[in-house]
Image 1: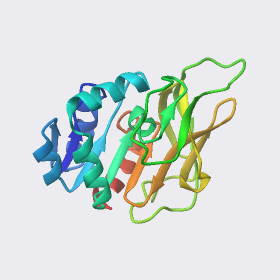
Image 2: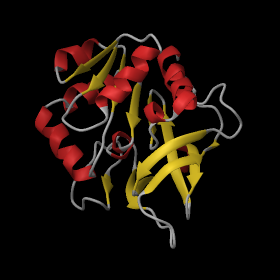
Image 3: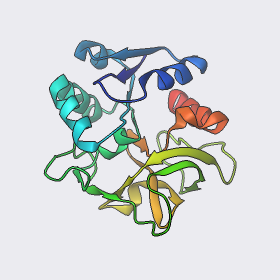
Image 4: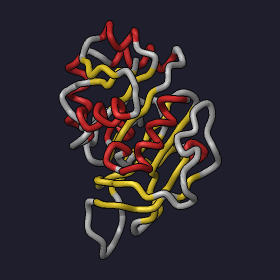
Amino acid sequence: MIAIIDYGVGNLFSVEKALLQLGAQVEVTNDESVIRQAQKIVLPGVGAFGDCMENLRASGLIPAIMDMVQQGYPLLGICVGLQILFEGSEESPGVSGLGVFSGTVRKIKAPGLKIPHMGWNSLDVAEPHQPIDLFAGLASIPYVYFVHSYHAVPADKDIITATAEYGETLTAAVARGNVQATQFHPEKSGDVGLDILKNFIQG
């Protein structure tokens, strides 16, 4: 069972629909006991970094999420669900993230281009990540759908598994061990996004 964490923010039902379409057993939940029974976790997020962290803290689910991560269960963060895995963000000074990854989230610097970075963009995929390679079997230049004004700048660049170009090189996906995350929305990225989610399900 894959638990999609419902803490009041995020594109929950589009993610649920995509995973169900792929045959996964899915539960959208804000119940700690259900999260602890899951085999995999999806952490979505839409909106401002500070609002997402405030809602997540208020939900009381952080201990369950962190315990599952430390026990090695696969977690997939999506959009702001990626950003809150880091230590903090320029968007919300003074608000601490989960700190799963070292580094911060910074505003996109793209002079002459519209912010937010919104729409389809190509990915430059790095070496395959184990144990789950989200990008296995994709075309050499996959296109995915983004909506964001900030992107993660990891302290350890080796955790970056994909980048995109938009005025500067943007972090599009990160991974370390059992924790992976995408800045783009796989659930809005057509067949490519479904293949990425399928890799998460089957990995």
